[in-house]
Amino acid sequence: EVANEVVARASRRTEALITVHASPDTTITARPHQLERALSNLVDNAVKFSAGTSAVEVHVGAKRVEVRDHGPGISDEDKPHVFDRFYRAVATRSMPGSGLGLAIVAQFVQDHNANAYVLDNADGGAIVGIQFTA
Image 1 (cartoon, helix red, strand yellow):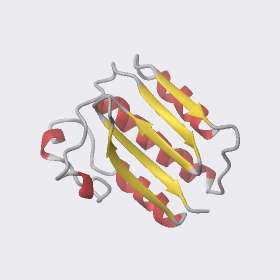
Image 2 (tube, helix red, strand yellow):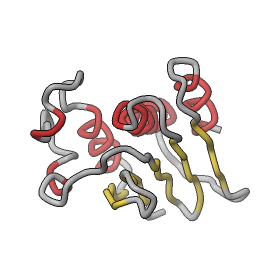
Image 3 (tube, rainbow, N blue to C red):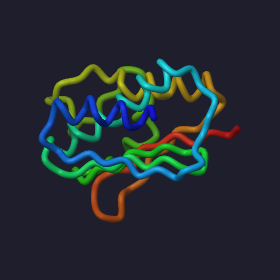
Image 4 (cartoon, rainbow, N blue to C red):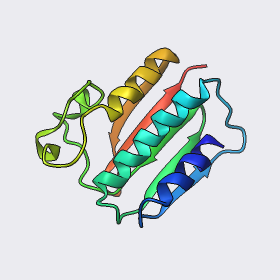
């Protein structure tokens, strides 16, 4: 439900196609507003780094939510730092943003005993996700 609401809002602000793919038995316990903010930050980043034109996919299931984009991806040297407060990769410093979006995700993860991760998308781009432990 939260993923659908976030995607509906984000879709009104971009021409990018944003889709939700969810398993039917996906339930987690989390602070709703904090979850919404974290997921919104993941979707907004994916849209921004896809130049607002490539598809963005939100996958929900198996106690996990991940956002996949088809932009330039995240370099291996930047991956360990993207959740740090105010971190901006050299390649993104000319783009809008403060470096707080993924730090907010990191705080959500810490508050909910979860894990955040960044992977390369096999189709190009990045996968940024949250794995819940309970």
